[in-house]
Structures are given as C-alpha cells and as structure tokens.
Length: 279
Length: 346
Image (tube, rainbow over all chains, first blue to last red; front, side, top):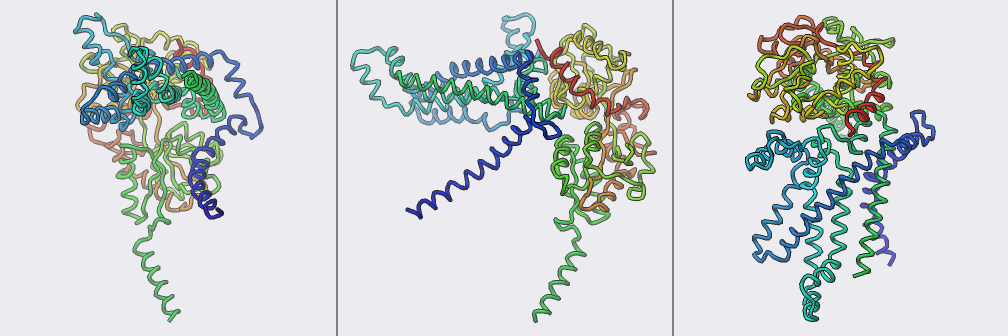
C-alpha cells in the first residue's frame, strides 16, 4: 500500500512540476504584475482603467462576437462533416484520407495560413476574381479589414477541432439506441433529434468550447486579416507588451480576457450538462 | 602516480585551453535579431571576430524588445555580453540601467564612427549605431510609372484602398506619427492634425509586421505605402515590380545599435566584438547584405548597393529624420491609445 502510494506520488510529481513551472508560475507572474506598479505597490488602477472605460467593453464585445460567430459556423460546418466521415463513408481508405485532409492543416503555422488568406481574399485575389467572373459582383468585395475576413480565417483554422470532437462522440454512440428508437416506430428525424443529438452533445460542447477559447485568444489571424482596421482584445494585449512596454496594464488586460472567457466557458459547460441530463 | 596523473591532467587542460580558448564557457554571448539580419551579423561581424580572436560567438536570437526583457531579467547575473537593439529600445535599456558605458580606450573604432551614431548621456556612451535603415515611400512600378515625389501622394484618390502605413504594433508605427507630425508642421505636442489626416487616408491595411507589408505589396493588395528599405529591396531582389524612393520631405529612419551589457562576463572580448562591428569592412558588408546605411566614416559601397541605402541614391545621413527617442517613448502610450480609439475602431 505504502509502496503504491509512493509510486503514485512519483508519477504525479512530474506532471505537477511541469504544470507548476510552465503554467502556474508564468500565470502568477502575470497576475501579480496586473495588480502592482513599477514601484511594487499594490493597486487596482489598471483594472479600473479597463473596466470603467466604454472603449474596452466595445472591443470585448467585438472579440466575443467574432468568437461566438466562429463557434457557430464551425459547428454548422463541422457537424455535417463529422457525420459524413463517421456515418456515411463506408470505404475505410477514403475515410482515412478525409481525416488526414482535416488534420494536415493543423501542422502548418497559423501565420502561413493567414498570409494565404490575405492573398486569396485580397482585392485582386482568387475569391474576388472568381466572384467577378461569375458575375456575382461588379467591384471587388472588401474582405480584408472586415469582420467577415477574420471570420473566414478563424473558421478555416478551427473547424478541425469540431470535426474531431464531434466525430469521436458520434463514433462511440451504440447503434442499438438508434435501432431501438426505430423499432419503436420513430422516424429518422425524430431519432436524430431525441436520441443521437443529445448523445453526442458532450462531444459537441467540448469541441465548441475549444473553438471558442481559441477564437477569443487568437492573435495572428485577426491581426493579419483585420489589416489593423479592427481591434480585438488580444491585439490590445500585444500592443502593451510589444510597443508600449506597459507590462502592468498589459497583464491586467490579459487577466480580464481570461476571467471573462472562463465565465462564458463555465456557462457553456452548464448548458452542456443540462442538455445531457435532459437526454 | 597520483601526482603524475594530476600533472598530465593539468597540462592536458592547459593544452586544450590554448588550442580551443573558446570552450562553451568562454564563448561570447551576443543578442541579435532573427532571419537575414542574424545571418548578416554572423557573416559580417561574428565570423571575422572569431577568425581574429579564436573566440566563439553564441547568438541569442530575439527582437529588440525580447532582448531588453532578457537583460532586465538577468540584471544581477548577466549571461549576455553584447546586445543589438534598435533605436528606441536602446534608450529604454539605458534608462533601466542594464548597459555599461563604451569608451574609446576599449573600443578604438568609436573614433571612426559618425558622430550621429554615437549615443551618450551623463553616464557616457551607452550605444553605438551599426547601420541605418529607413521607412521610405514604396510603390508598385507597374501601377505607378514615375517615382512619387511626396508623401502626400498617399492621399491621392487613385490609390484609395490600396495604401499602407504601419500600425502602432509595429516598431515604426509611433515614430511614423512623429514623422507625419513634422511634415504636416503640426503645433508642438499636438497630434490631433496627424490623426485627422490619417482618418482621411483610404488604407488597405495598417501593417503590424514588416512581413505583412511585404505580402501586401507582393500580392498587389497595396500599390503605394510606407515600407522599410530592407523589405522593399528584398522584394525587388525577388524580381517584383517594386520601387523605393526618398520623397522631398525625407524619410524617418532608425538604426540597429550595439550595446555592452553591464557586468558582462567577458567585458574585454565584448569590447573587441563591438570594435570589429565598427570596422569599415563590417560596415560595408552590412550595407551590402541588409542595405544598412553605414555608420562608419568613409565607407564606399558599390553603385548597386548605394541605390538601396536608406537615404536614397545621392543622400547621406543628413537626409534622415532621426528621432529624439526619449520624446517618443514619453508619448508612446498616449499615441497608441488615441490610434486605437480614432483609427482602429469603427
């Protein structure tokens, strides 16, 4: 008993030490610097400056709006894709190829992919050329420097997370539930709505939370695709660290975004739980 | 026997020390930038230095601000000996007290350096420039045949939605506002006219990284705008139809500076390294590789390189608008905040 406890402690030690050194310690540094001044006196002035200023709430609203839209579109695109991969594809090789196609972009850096979108979405880019050739628009549509542009970039980068999370949930659902539902005379649409969907809700919610958290904190994609004309919160944080050098104010901005995101993720988690209980 | 053994070990160590004086511990640690900048610093300065002294140079790659953060963190026990940092960050480092003054006794080549490139205060010389780069008017030669003569061309209606200038997230963003302030003859300390003018600008993007600007010029998204001479000539070298010009108002410029770290573990060698960077050979090499305007007196470069220097074909350091960085740093937070609210906010 004692031996196994020692073994457990040893096993736990490595991940805990790693977690403390690379997550808790930097986090503590940021948290402390957000409530101090250069003279190391305690102050909440940085938070007051953020929370009492309508401008910051404006930027937060833009940030959360973009993240929510990204999550919504990722779910709408990712869910059918996951369904197709798990339920419709019968040929195993083709399924493997599809999974690889979904995952491979994750191996390329965000910077490269966002630069790619800058070229595609530009005034003379492929998207506008195609739209004009098809006669859908007479003048090039402005994508760069708009929320639409940022949304396109973020959805493209984050869709794989939904496909993987939902696909995993779908694959673990026991077919016999759906068969039972059909045996009891319920049509496929109602079976999906009352049986399949609630069963894969936990997977869908975790996918949505990952996408939302990544979209809220995204820097590279919004920074490049906004063309500096739209500000999201992470850009304010970057500015303070990189060009204003006010680390205290920058830290307070970071903690503000972190806390608000955690609150929203917490609410989403509750919704997921409620959904599961209802099922 | 034991004594014998000790003797052998000692002489072996001594021998090793003479053959390879630059074991990892004795290597000189130099902070510089990444990409082609680091490559150029290596081949123009570090390699000749190692050849002459036998001391290995270990690069610590990072942007100026990252280097400053490192220097602040290792204030009590520095591992860095020498650091390259840009103008602006250089002043912040000096204010933080992480730099050691340079002297002509330690760095004799300071005598051959342009007076503008020697930065001193009451403590002495805290930095020395190793080459200038500028933010000039860059344009697409396919769309614009004649080189634009003035910065005012950015506001021409035919370039609407195809213009770029730096955003404050870029190191040149805030300085560029000071430059506009100067060429608009705005009243001292009042930036309202500058922001009013930028609001009238129909920009395609405000670039936050030099790469984003290059990308926009390359794809044709932007046909005219501000860009670094280093980036513009890189695009030209790739065969793109890009031109770079110094308009009649001049250009804003800054420099990559060398600093001796306070309590550097290898002070003597560090000074020698800085001295090597200030030789005409090193300065010429940096001009050819990075198009940095030489800060060393009497450096002659090829006609091809001269065209690409930050001050343009016939200019000199006098054509550059060099900022008083202390003034810029004092106004930095305020200008970034105003920009966020006025320009990057709908």
